[in-house]
Length: 71
Image 1 (cartoon, rainbow, N blue to C red):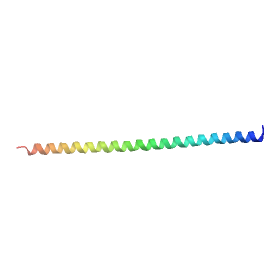
Image 2: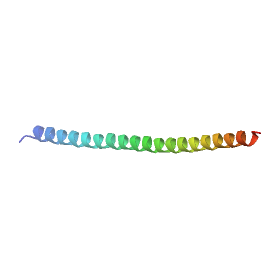
Image 3: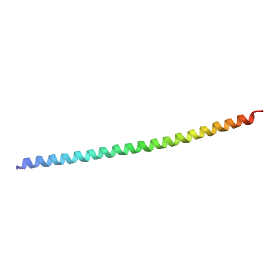
Image 4: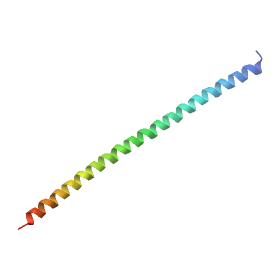
C-alpha cells in the first residue's frame, strides 16, 4: 500500500471517529435538554397542584363564610 493510500485511510478513520464523537455530543445535549424539560414540567406540575389546592381552600373558606353569614 502506498503512503498516500495509508494517509487517506488514516484520514477517513480519523473523520469517522470525529463523527462518532460529534454524534455522542449531540446525543448528550439532547438528553440534557430532555432532562431539563422533564424537570421543568415536574416543577410546573407541582406548582399547578399547589395552586389548585390553594384555590380549593379559598373556595371552601368562602363557602363556609357564606354559610356562617346566613341568618
